[in-house]
Image 1 (cartoon, rainbow, N blue to C red):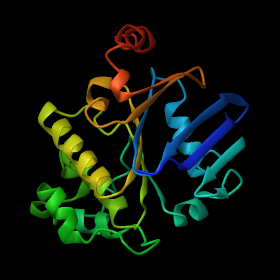
Image 2 (cartoon, rainbow, N blue to C red; image 1 turned 180 degrees about the horizontal axis):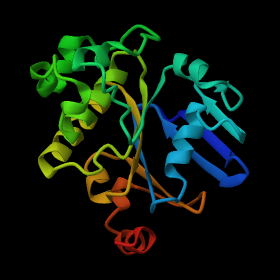
Image 3 (tube, helix red, strand yellow; image 1 turned 180 degrees about the vertical axis):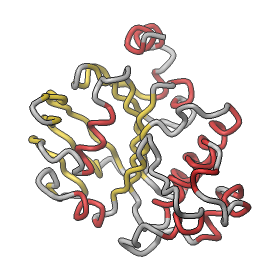
Image 4 (tube, rainbow, N blue to C red; image 1 turned 45 degrees about the horizontal axis):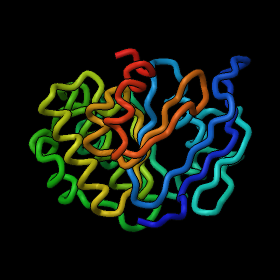
Length: 235
C-alpha cells in the first residue's frame, strides 16, 4: 500500500439546486485502502461520492485523482480515469436480464474482470444469467451492481451502502468480496451506516456530519472510539 493518496479532496462544497449540501469536505484515500465514510442519514456521505463522480454538477474545491484535478470534469470523463460508482439504489435495468446488465457498461481501460472471474466472486449470478434484473433478490441485485463495475477496468470503486437491507449471510458475502478486491489491488471508498460491518473491511474511517468531516480514525482505533461512534451515529 502506497502512502501517496490516489484521491485527495479539499474544501469540497456542493449544492443540490440552491441547497448547500457539502460545507468543506476534506479527506484522502491511499492506493489499496478501503476507506469508509460513516454518518447518519442526510449527513452528506452519498453527496460526497456523487461529487467525486461528477454527478453533482455544482461543486467547488479541489478533487485530485492520481494527480489530475477533476472537480470541473464531467462524470463520463471521470469514469474514463478509472473511477466507478455503485449507487445505493443499484440501478438494475428491469427490461434486461442478468447477462445484459453485466455487459452494459463500457470497458474504460484494460484489466477489468472477465465474466468467469466475476462468477467466481458471485456464483449466484451465473445461475441467474437469463433472469430479469428485477426478479433477483436484493442481495443478488447488489452483487450484480458491484459485478457490473468490475468489468469496466476501473480500479477505484465507490460503493454506496452496499449492505443496506440485506440478510446477514449476504452481508458476509459482500464483506468477503470487498476484502478479496482489496487483496487484488482495488482501492475502495465505502459509504456505510453499519460500522460493525465496516470494521470488518475498512482500514480507516471519516465521520461526516452536516456536510463536514468531524472526525477520523484508523480501524485499530475503533474500540477506543466506540462511545463517540455511538453518539455520532445514534446507535
